[in-house]
Length: 404
Ligand code: ADP
Image (cartoon, rainbow, N blue to C red; front, side):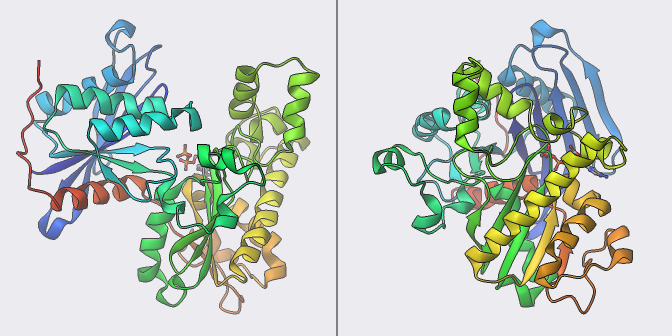
């Protein structure tokens, strides 16, 4: 069986999926897994296509000190126990920098170029690159593809790509990149089948997960994003504040004596739903919670989505459809209803029954703008990119023995 391994490596976990390559290049998800607790309590868990558990095992901390070791453990498990030798690996890489507007086949030169963007995404890029480097060393013949969260947004006009700061900083890479690009690309590719009449129009997509952003799609291409230089900007999120006056950061430094790493930790881990509620970063815990702080955190989340929808509508000079996706967008009928309520001024009218049953179209027939729920699939996007880059080059030998 020809398979593609998709890897999403973070600081303390590696998520992976196996797709089989079927006739005419169709991809079928076979396995979903993750190794988490790297450096603390390592654990490998995986399930098959129908959700049945294939593995759930703990490892001693010394056997899995870092992300490459975790991926090696998952790889050994796949090869030795399931007899799966992927023909290629597709990686999620957060930052492609200014020039990568599409996925790229990885070699040592590409890795060196991507290392330059560590400064632009210090919390994610090093963890994305570490397993790539280790696979390049141990399996030099195994094709690897990097798929970027930023690439889909490289179509932005100059006004959407800049901050009003001296040009030298722009040249260095201080730009409004935008993130969640693989999710938006998936939605843009799915829309022609779901709603062909609006797929070529002006669509606002709200990716609402533990990270959250919105994207303005014009004719299937990204025109504007609520995220910018980093994934801190825009909407409030599980633990990130979203848009914040830079003066607050100056206050934290000058008045509270916080160092740069303190401020970074604070902005990535202690704000958003968690900071505002003081209760939880998980929308499920806040939704039904009667505590006024939980209500404020949820109201703020919804309010900012409404404000940003106005901004994106202005960027698009109108809106033809609105799409919800990701954890909250796909699963919370209550949050969707509150957001649609905020969008009432645009002539959007919810169909509560369709919304409660998580239908694909959740607006009423007389709504001026249709509202859709489209489950995203970033991993499938990565597998598709990996396969298509692979098919443009001589087919590799599907077996890749470890170089010792
Ligand atoms: P990630 O950004 O980690 O990929 P997801 O897209 O999986 O996140 O979204 C995770 C978030 O979705 C969770 O933190 C949770 O708040 C939210 N979520 C998932 N299911 C529900 C639900 N039924 N109701 C409300 N929120 C939900």
